[in-house]
Length: 191
Image (cartoon, rainbow, N blue to C red):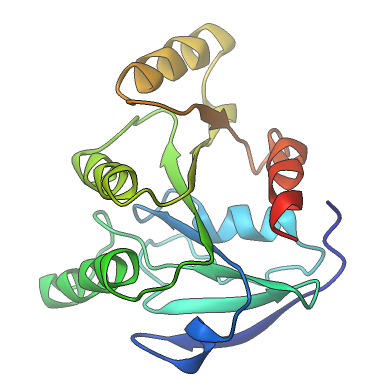
């Protein structure tokens, strides 16, 4: 798939008509500082479409980007590592859980992004359990693969895959564009 157009539509923090307008949603989730916004930016032709920052926790709502006038990329707030008050942490976690469990959005694919070097965190495993129990389609992307040597990367991928009940891990590097074509190929099916 080639992404020709991408533009920011709106940010929401709860129910909104955009969730139910019939367009497919590709939702990017993961802990803070895992590179969700950077990964989105690596897929689109618009520079800095999704907001990135050196300090984690800048995304505090669901940001919707219209891709090729056909479907949305949805950039979710990160969970876990962000330097925000605990009250905001709780609100962000509840937003993610609400979207997965109660929003009744059916036309979606979750891209769960983890840090390859860190592996699966406890909250990543919680999200995976929800996705599998609810039969929600997802892809598991192991970002920052450029930070490891090949033998370390292979070992870490095997370790992560051993913790999954099914599915595979797609290694990705925003810096090197590694995994980009593979991910775009999978996303062709949603277009």
